[in-house]
Every structure is written in structure tokens, then in C-alpha cells.
Length: 385
Length: 167
Image: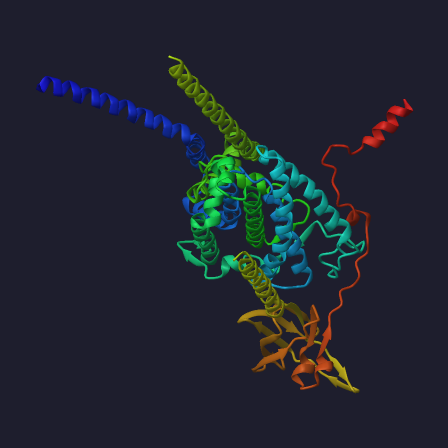
């Protein structure tokens, strides 16, 4: 009796061991990218020679600068539209708002707020256009949004380079090109530089904490958590899980998807303004170009995937990705004697992370499909027998 | 029910737009920035010459923005129209400092404003000490015009084609 019980306990233990091991493997599989980044950072930090205080200061600054932008990616993922490369459109809308604000000489936080308000209609318009195109390209949203961002970039360049100053009134000589129309390569945002970051900022052992910026980020996080529970948020999740089922349940799938892109674009616009106020200047023709790529890479580094992302992924991603950004050039310089290696490394890693995430997503999708097919075949066989 | 909802939605949207416009208007008003230039230079008004003090220290937001000897110019950025500054005036070398707190309304439409401090301290009317700063026109150079970069690596393509045609 007791022997039998022992045998049973032994089997249960083995099963537990197997499930524990499998669980660990599953955990590793699901968190490959963050674990890889933790290892890279753990190797690079001591080599780089940066002090912990310096690294913490840099990470806090970069968290304040980038988190809002990355949070903009969560809503389209919730709606099953994948990584929104079209967030660049919001960034462009924000830049147009900032150009006007710089021309009208509106300083500080009022300038930021005004730029945000100006960016809303532009972001909404671009979001609707993008959403409609993405509805026509269902299943290929990411590549479509990536190409849309290039297309809208062309229109942006046309407006900024040729229409501003000639058709659209721009009077300030520090903003306008000397030829009389077009915007300068760099627009100074010195009068709003770090105004939000400095508001309520506290200094803890040499680390400046931009409290107001973090409050703004916290408000957006709370909004996202609340939004997921609303009717529209639930609709988005339903659409994200299965469009056909959602449609059968009476949800207007197309409209819901457009709203998710519009929201993402508007939030990205706000995020870009927070980003640029930290930088203190605007590279008119290039500030927005890499934003989408780096935001997406940071989110993926945080352990998100094409179809699943959380606020936790955003924070972990910003920390790990930017830690790598800070230490890689210095570590590269120490190892090879050439800092450019580190620079190349961080850019290469950004693209690599996105590629890995896309491959993993496609593999998972195919595996699920084949599993479903096997299950269906087994069921049919069972019926025949 | 549907009509009622639509009306409510319409009202809500109009209300949101109105609120945003109001906030934008407010931001226009309170966020308007000016660059204020302070001159410690001789001023002429109605044939009267106002002499400059030996030195004026200008404080804006408790920060010294100018230490102006006779003939000097300083500057500061200011947000809004209600400008305040503190002046520490030294009339003669080694003399005692006199403190003057100045508050004045800046004209909304001027980006750059020049304040002639001796004229202002002499109590002259606004047009005697306040004028608009007009930046000197910038010469257009070829370099300034070149802003478009060729990201497709097509630069020099025409030259290359010409060369190959020549061969």
C-alpha cells in the first residue's frame, strides 16, 4: 500500500519535474529577447566603465523621453494590428505643430500644449487615412504601415520644404530658410527645452527624476488600463482575437481598427513632443524617421510580441534597450578600439530584434495552424472509425 | 434612441473641440515669448540727452542676465506680457548700488523688444525707451539652400552618365 503510494508520489514528482522543466523552457522561449539583452548588458556594463549613478541618470532621462512614444504602440497591438510602424505619422504631425509653435514664439509648457493641440487634427486625419489603408491590407498591416510612413514622409517633406513660408505663413527667420520658403534643417526648441522634465523635478543622489514627465506617463498608463475595460477597449480586444467572430457579435470591425490607429497616432504625436522637448531641438527632416523603428525595437526587447504587449513590456524594454544604447558604443570602443563598432552594433541590434520578433510571430502562427490542422484530421479520423 | 445618441455625440464632440480651442487660445496668451534686450546706452528724446549710469545689473527671475557697463547690451527670454525685472544701478564707479524693481507690459506682437534702461529709469514715456528689435536680413548662400539629401545613392549619377556617354 505504502509502496504503491510511493510509486504514485514518484510518478507525480516526475510529472511535476517535467512540467517544471517544460515551464522553464516555455519561459525561456517566451522571453528570449529580454534574456538576451540582459546578458548583453551584463557583459557590456563592466566593460564600458560607466558608474552606476551615471547609468541610472541616463536610464531615467531616457525613460522620461521615450516611454510615452512606446506606449502609443499598445493600442493597435490590442486591436490585432501588430506593430504600428505608422506611428511616424503622429511624429510628423507633432513636428508640424512644433514648427508653428516655434514660429509663433510660444514658449515653455504652453508651447508644448499648443503643439499637442495642433497635432491632434493632423494626427487624426493621418490616422484615418492609415487606418483605411490598413483595413484594405488586412493581415499585412505592419508592412503596409511601414510603407505608408514613407509615403506620408514625402508629403511632409513637400509641405515643410516648399509650402511652409510660401503658401503657409511662416515669418520667423530662425525657422524659415534664408531663401524665403521652407523650414531650416534644425529648429531650435531651446525655449521649451526640458520644461516638462524640470517641472517638479527632484534630485536623488545626483539622479534627476523628471516627476512631471513620469506623472504624464502614469496618466497614459492609467488611461490604457481603463480603456481596456471600456466597451471600445473590449471591442478592440475581440477584433484582435478574431475579426470574424467580432463581426458576428455585431462589432464594426473596420471602424474599431481605424479608431485604434487614430488613437495610436495621436498618442505618438504627444510622445514625440515630449521626446523633442527633452532634446531641445528638432531635426525637421529626420527626427521622425527612426522613431518608429526604435520604439518598436524597445517594445520587443521588453518581451512583447506582434500580438501581445503590456505596459510592463514597455518599461522593461525602455530600460534594457536604452541601457544597451548607452553602454554599447563605449564597450565597443574598449573592446575593439573603435567606438563606431558599438554604434553599428546598437543599430544592427535594433533591426535584428524586430526581425527576430517577426520570424517568431510567423513561426508561432504557422505552428498553431498546423496544430489545428492535425487536430481537425484526428477528429475526422475518429469520426470515420 | 439612435438620434438621441448621435445628438449627444455631436454635442460631446463640439464641446471637446471648443474646450481644445479655448485651451489653445489660453496657451497663445500665456505662452507668448519675447526676447528682451536691455541697452545701457545714451538716449535722445525731444532734444534731451539721457546719460548712462556706470553699471546696471539686470536680474530676471532672480537670475542675473546682464552686467551692463555704459554702451553694453544684454538680453533675456520672457514668457507672457507682464515683464518683471530688478535693476541694480551703480551711477558712478565705486558708488552705492540703487535697486529698482520694474514691471511693464510687453507688446504682444513684438518678438524682440529693446529696452533703453537709462531712458526708462529717467521716467520718459514708453515710446522713448521701448522699440522693436528687427534682426538684420541674412544673405542667401548656396549652402543654405541645399537641404535635400539623396538617400537613394543617386548623387553624381548624372555626372557618371555624362562620363560614360563621353567614352
